[in-house]
Amino acid sequence: MELSERERAMLEIERSWWTEPGPKEAVIADQLELSATRYYDLLNQLIDRPEAELHDQLTVRRLRRMRDRRRQDRRSKQDRRSKQGRRNKMAPVNEEQSR
Image 1: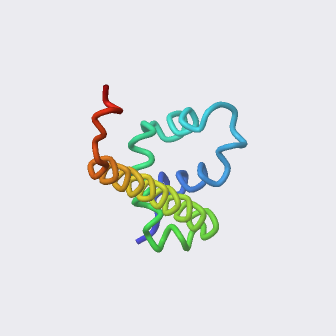
Image 2 (image 1 turned 45 degrees about the vertical axis):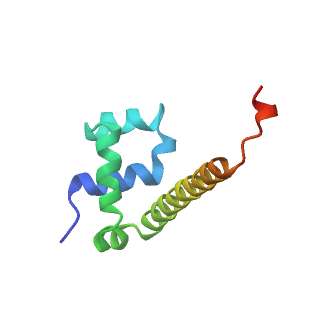
Image 3 (image 1 turned 60 degrees about the horizontal axis):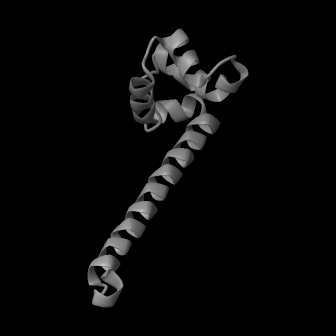
């Protein structure tokens, strides 16, 4: 299945949004008439499609790497919080320190 005009425009925005004046969200709203939330939802779906990679391999692979890195960072933070929570629950309470 071929990419739609909007999907091609999304990849173009990701390729060169920093050359546009103003914040990226303004470029998204002006060019695609989408909220940033909806845009990123659609973009994450788009970069998983083989047609997107065929259309713009460098941009799609960069976006996938960025997404994977963010996911890994979130997992690492969750793991650290989980370990910290277990450590706090297991720590003995010293009554003299609590006074």
